[in-house]
Length: 378
Length: 250
Image (cartoon, rainbow over the protein chains, first blue to last red):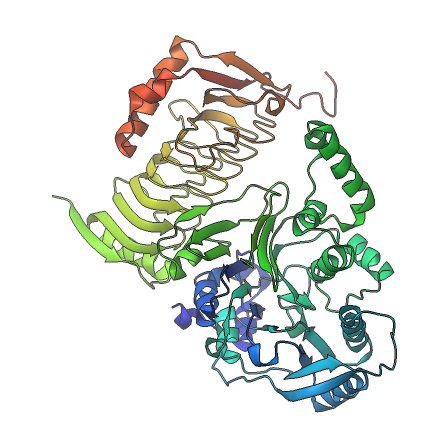
């Protein structure tokens, strides 16, 4: 709806850098988030998240947009769908060669895109659907998911100019530099249907606005979109390195994807517990708890202190089982949640939800630090 | 006879919408009805004079910021930053409002029927005849009245979506050094830090509360008598210079 205001990166750079610093029009923004889940797994068209995030156009500045979608590859649902972005064909060949060493490839094709007015340059975007080789060349004792994580880390660390930016089953991330409505059009998201979608409009603050740095960040079928800044990035990153997760995408939010995988999939914590690590209760709140709860939260803070996310944030994260929204403990970023029938919506702004769900049954702003966890019904 | 106009805001970019409103004001229009508003920012921001706005939909960030005089009735919700540094006029919201409502507000009145977000009324101030007032029909988040220097916050806690939540949150009145917060009912003890003076209201307080709650009730179709039946408490700062001794002890 706001198309006429959209400009390309070239135009954006011209707009910003053609003037002296003190003459520049000031961009006042924060990132924008949107998410939707259908609890009964009924499929939602990709045009819904695109429309809803477009309403929050002014929360970003054209330096990043992206989407995560669940349930989009039903015909390949048992295969890991690896989405790659590569500087050029050579980088893609190197990456594909490495992937072929570890996996059986069932389908290898370009990610369908279309030329649009505002996304003029893009890396080579490719997807391969793979399964773990019977006869593995390495990591024989790892389970399949850990094996996939190991290969993703190896590609992202070792293959120059190639990144796997999505590695889950029956899900995928689509992201790049541009406004999200343009990224959505570019990736032809209206042709996909999923039961969970998240969307992100980026206003990069501390890190570059590049294709790999756009949200969502993913590992296996975890995906995360984030509005804010993770000041604890250094601690989180070093902690993750001890657990063999390598941060390669130069953006703070990346740590959250790997922390989710570590806490929930590997350590077996619940989503609620993971959220309590990210945004733990204050010590004075713990002091007022019943003894058993007090002991649990004290232990959580002692054991997982390095997993605490410091700084302002509103995040939406998802896996194949559900969608979660969470704010930092003192609510330095906005988050609104709404319900309508089997669907739950989450967004930075009320109007974004109403653009695709004009009359929700219920709409509210969740309390700081208290996760809104929506699981699929069976 | 005041000129009035209805504007369908659907799909109109916020800058274009606000430019249109200003152009119409130059043409002599005073009464505006904005329909299908979908988060457009800065509505009525910086307007000076007697204008009336009926806004249907969701009012975007910083609506009524720096405003001096206009009357806004928002039928729906307001997003963050409503009434930022507002100087005069009245804003009525039939739904809920977001974070930093009435930030640094210096005059006028804001009446919200439902719940409000975090950091409401922070940095509010008052001077001579200027006395900003915010009445909240629902409940408030953390940091209510933080660094408040003047003005009045009244929290009724009645029209809330969160029946089990406390009426206010953490860090209530942190750094407050002027103004007053009236709460209908009770605040959990642990939320009341040692910088706050918590007392029962007196007759003078009730005079002010009555006027404001009656305004609220008239604007938002509530029963003022019922709202006034419950006891109110008054929260004020203990000191006008809470940090006076922080670096250099007197």
